[in-house]
Picture (cartoon, rainbow, N blue to C red):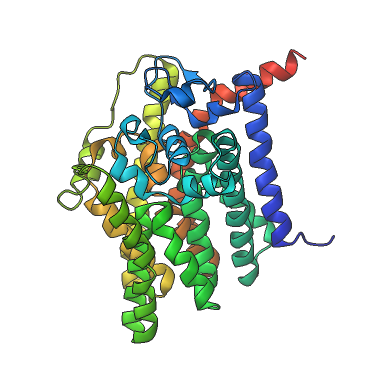
Length: 383
């Protein structure tokens, strides 16, 4: 049997994600595709969008995707929508996905939602395509590229339209290209922090790798790749109020505090209790990922992957914001670069143990899908 090409794997991944979204929108959200932005009932919306018939989740504050949805309607901060966003300076820095959506829509509000959904699906296509290419370069079957759909950030983005799928896709593409086609890699590296500022960890990791290799010209190019992000940050800071979010703390303070408080919410039923248990399992998965990275520094020569893992691990160690550590739907998404970089290391070294951290995070992410799965099955059986 002929092997599928990486291009085919990318298309299959995109179609699987789109198929899921179609089923859940039809059977759980009355055919209203705006439900994928997960807008809360108690969250105020600008009149222009409130009239669109945006799906609202009852008694819910919503989720991050609803803010990026607003940014896609006002990427250059000209329509006054920043007053409806919880932290404009933070959110607008992550311009890549909402900005591309607005660009594809030609700036027309009526087309922005569809364009945004397209950007998410396109990110899934490229992520699976690049991961499949990476796998084939290391003598794996191309179908392993479908594991891109198992990255926690990707599953959360499919469900709630966060911007993290683009970060995951660009990160995998960067690792795949940088060693063999540096200019392609540098283009992707320049886009990473525009998707989410944690992309700078890969910039830092690349710079550390080039310092170690004494490749001073490539070090300068890696540093220069952050210039577009710096320019965008300057624009955003000139048009938004100060962001006083306390992201950083003493080393390990955030993760240790979360470890010492395994229950973060009232256990009101079996589902919530199961969620709390799986949240803690996911937290242990992050600990295991950090242990793997520390171990790498004592056991093998360090390449680009290892340096990027080191840079991101330092960010995890210093991260102190409590709500990020609250549940796996938050920290599993935020820390997905640590997980997919370990997944790629597993491919390049053929050591499956590096897949364990992601395997420990995934059950909690999958549990969040359970009510939708039941709704789809009930809808199909009722036909």
